View 1 (cartoon, rainbow, N blue to C red):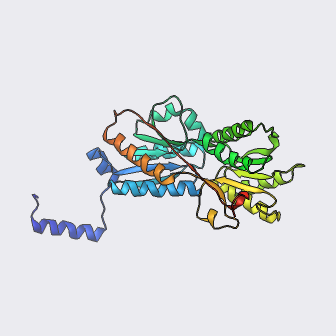
View 2 (tube, one colour; view 1 turned 120 degrees about the vertical axis):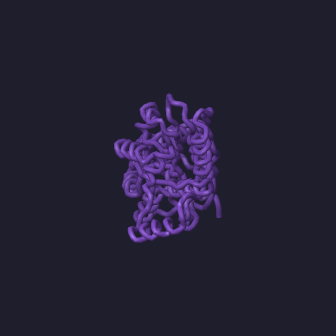
View 3 (spheres, one colour; view 1 turned 90 degrees about the vertical axis):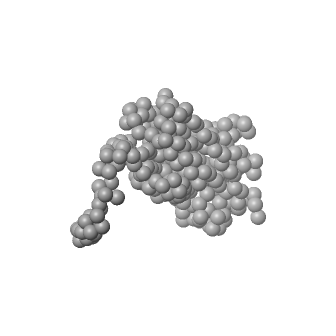
Length: 307
């Protein structure tokens, strides 16, 4: 307001000539206020995290924030690099889907002193806002569904190195125990949560002397690999083998037969995490919350129980 019009015009002409833009980080440091939040996910190729990322961006935009997205690939070293990068960028806060190592030793991360919300995985020994689903109960529900439709040898493929994989295995074991089913450990596999690993692990299950009569995968990337293995092996679903998975995706209802899945509330996870983070930014002393959201079983033809 104290600059004459002619001076302003001269300054703006030079701004245009030099294509100048203000240094965002310097501006944030001076004002001690940032309108950028960081989002670190485990695997951006996973549709689960794609949907959460979209929900975070939508919710953040509504509140006047932008989102900086990072991908840790379940690699704790890469995760630490991004955490320090976001701190150095002076972001207002971070939404984090932590690696297993970080989840188990979260006190080291809390020393960064950045407002933070953790999604998808429970952390230990530190009070932090946490958004979860009940992985044990969700896995129990879908395995129980397979058992109730006559399947007894259920091959299960879980992502290695994550708390979600371990919890979903707990749900499987609990469902088998409820029905007094003794299952060989050969039918339970942990592998990298990628499509190619889902393919290779499914081939190994099919080569067992007593192969499974149903296959369950704990995420959509493993599901894509498992489906490819079944098709290349010319095994009919559900006539020869039933199939079910975690994660609703666009293609899950388009493939033939359409897949029975556990649908996770991805939109609600992303939006709730963003809202909690902004509240934490505005009031760092507020008490922490752990929010557990409900999943949903969607029954389709791949289990042989819907026409």
